[in-house]
Length: 414
Image (tube, rainbow, N blue to C red; front, side, top):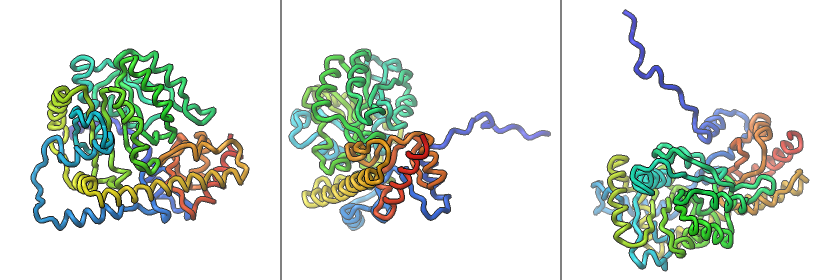
């Protein structure tokens, strides 16, 4: 009797996640010159992961605290983490905090915050069990934005203009035009700072223009804040856009990640901040989000949340953390300056001011797919097909090699 076919026989193999496939290819490469500019994590000048000194200190404090246990947290998460995560996003003097019209949900990283927000919006925003409201993401954007909202049940994912390839900067007019044309109550995913993948952010004046159109067109802002403090070195500067929208009376969501600014990549520490018109509206929203969390991960983990909460509630630890974050931000800014300087010294065709005009971990180099292929195959320098590089992958030891390789790719490959 022939063996029965597997019940999984018809399951197709999904394509690998691009950034993790790139890292796997890098690890298998035996060439001594190899450089990984694709990884989405901070690296020291020695090319190593960095555990923030303040995190090391707090971990030891937690380990030595005999009063702590492993009981379940509340479904919505550790209260002191949620409150203080929202506080650094919105600011100590936030009118929304003072008026008690904010709430939050501890999540599994920034992705978890996006997913809980997306699930809620699909169920309760602009009509119950809503799948037809357009969700707009920037072109380009972090690829998971599309997947999260599709998997949450939204059927109409659209793009809005963002990157102007010709001038290697923000296409503000295209963005505003798309917002003007968007149906009322459309959802717009906005990068709070350090836009991924371009590294190009609107200026405060441009954010004001964006907010004015969104208010007039009744568009819902859903901020993704993955790099607060990490982008410029200033928590306040990196939260400017979110705080401005709150000051303008918007109801909004803000997904926060503490992977980058605390270096807690594998602890999955995130928070979804909800700003509403009043306390009653916010509490009803949270009651529904609690039901979503219950069937998603049921209860969040405590370790990463305790690290963040302990740090944010101690003035001394908070100051130390801000200094650690600035150390990371300053290294990224230095690598931007050094790479631009080398490319200009080499006389590399094109303009390279966008390298220093951009902000945050990533830079959109402007390299085309053929040039990227040349960099990977001939130079063993790994970067995304879009031309995005992680500035933290650059070090004082590989800067010259990377700059000369970019020069060669741009010169030889059109």
